[in-house]
Every structure is written in structure tokens, then in C-alpha cells.
Amino acid sequence: MTIWLAGCAPFTENNLIEEISPITFLSISKGDNGKLKVSTILPSLSKKNKNVMSQEVSLLKEGVQKYNLNFYQEVKSGQMRMLLISDELAKEGIMSIINVILTDPDIPLRIYLVIVKGNFEKYLESQLDKDENFDYSFYRMLKHYEEKSQGELTVINLHQFKHLLYSPYSDPFLPVFKIQEDGVNYEGTALFQDDKLVETISSFDDRIFQLINNNHYLDILPISEFEVVLGHVRSKIIVDIDSSYSTMTYTLNIDTRIEEYRGEKQLFDPKELENMKEDIETHLEKQTHELFKNMQELRVDPLQLGVKTKRPFSKPMEEKKWIELFEEMDIKVKYNINIDPLTDANS
Image 1 (cartoon, rainbow, N blue to C red):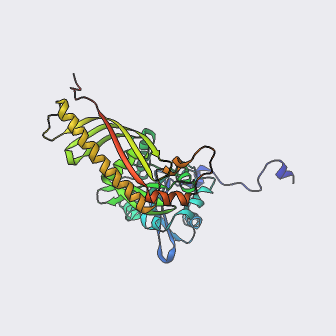
Image 2 (tube, rainbow, N blue to C red; image 1 turned 30 degrees about the horizontal axis):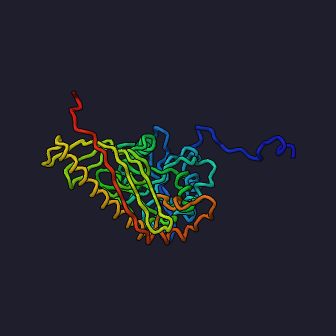
Image 3 (cartoon, rainbow, N blue to C red; image 1 turned 45 degrees about the horizontal axis):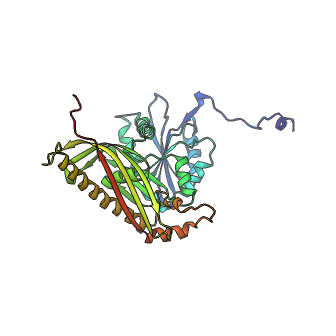
């Protein structure tokens, strides 16, 4: 009784730096017979020889326990910075994994969530001799793009994913990286219906998603159809849904400049520049409309458009009703592009 009143716990954890091994990431994929395959690098923060350690378990916490039974230092998750989930596992649903991570008080909410295509464990083993700090480099890349809000690639942490998963009128999304011979390459954005991966958008569609998802900034936006590269692209979005919920107008006001052009138009001529601008607007409107149509067919709302249905002094619409309306909604996309006049940047 005296111990409890003094605020002392009946046991203490071993946190001596010499006797613990913090893990910086976990990679989770499908194992055999419905099990999970959990992998990481140990020791992660040491100059000693590193090894890829994998365990097949029925429960996620069991994997960490097995690491402790097979490694000379006690594994701790307080320094975990990334959770990498295979696309095969994500297609079956990841809510149970997310809930385990959320209820672990040692794991920070700012860890990055990533979907991986390919055998990540095998790739790790091949990289240890080449770049033993590969995991840290990967983390620094994600952190860079999160801080700059460039929209060059999707970056989502655990807190953001939780908000998208459990908030009404929203579906989560995560970045997708693919294992290839030349490395781990960004492929696009995974769209989720609740906790299940249903579609991966890539290439130009992913660039558009970055623009329409938020008031984002893109360093470059290549448009091969017109042999032009737009640079310093900034978008401002206006969404309007009519009172009958049958039509939505999605307006994007874009400020940009031309970084490169290999076509035949004389863009120093204001008239030809205007024609080019109109062509780009029409092209982007068509591509964006197709992306919206794909979301409607998938019945997903990663842009949280349903929030726009909320009205003062009225009961919020049920999420199921919103998805039904969204699926049949007529979506009109309008781009207004302002291109800075072409000048000699060095003059």
C-alpha cells in the first residue's frame, strides 16, 4: 500500500543503454498459414555487424518477444520511426496492426507508415554490405518531404492515418514504394477503403492527387503531351457542392512557371503562351476528372469531400449516405492556371 501511494511501480524496466537494442523500423508481410512475418535490422544503432532478423508469428507483439529470446540485447520500440507493410497484407486489411501500434505507449504517433511492393527483407539483406545505414537514409527522405510539404510524394504518419481511418467522411491513403534492382523507388499513393488497400495511383495520376489533395506545392510537373515542364506549381482549391448533392464543382487555381519546353510554339509570344495555357488546362481537367471517376467507382473519399456536406443547424449526413451520393455525383473540374511571363532568369 505504501509503495502505491508513493507512486512507485511494483516493477521497473531495464533501460540501461548497454543492455538494450532500440529498433528503428518494423517490416510486416504475409507469412505461411495466415501468420505475420516481422523483420528488422539488429542492432540498429550500433557500429557492430548488423543482421536482418525475421520471425513468423501469429501476433505482432509475439514477434518482439521472439527477438528478445534470440538476441543478446533486449529489444525496445521507443526509437521506432517507420512501419513498412507489404501490399499483399494491406489488401487484406491492416486495422489490427494499426490498433496494436496505437496502443503501445512506447511507439510515437509520428512514425511513418509505408506500403512496400516486393520482398523487402531480401532487399535489406542485399543492402547491408553496401549501405548499413539504409534504414536511416530512408527515414530522412520521408522526413524531408514531410517538412517541406512539397507534394513530390505522399508522406503519412501514424497520427494522420489514424485520423483518416476513424474520422467520418474520409478514407486513408499511404505512400507505395517498389523494390527494384536499382533500389527502393517511389511508385505512387495507395488508396484505402476503410483499412483495405483497393488501388494504387501512380505516375501522372499521383502528381494530380498531390495537387488536389491539399494546397500543395510541386517543384516540377512534367506534361509529356505538350513537351513542357511546369515548375514551382502552387494550387489553391475551392470545392462547391450544390444543395441537392447532385453536382460538385472542383476548382483549382494554379500559379506556376515554365521550366522547360521542347515543342514548336513560340512561347515568348503572349498569344501562343495563352494557347498553351488553355491546352494544359483542358488536359489537366480531363485527367483530374478521370481520377475522380476512379474514386467514385472505388467508393473511396481520401480527399474528405464529405465534410463539405455539413450545414449549420442541421444533422450531419451519415457516412454511408454520403458515399452513395458521391458515387453518383456529377463532378465538374475547372483549372485556372496563371503562368508567369517568360523572362531571362539570369538578367
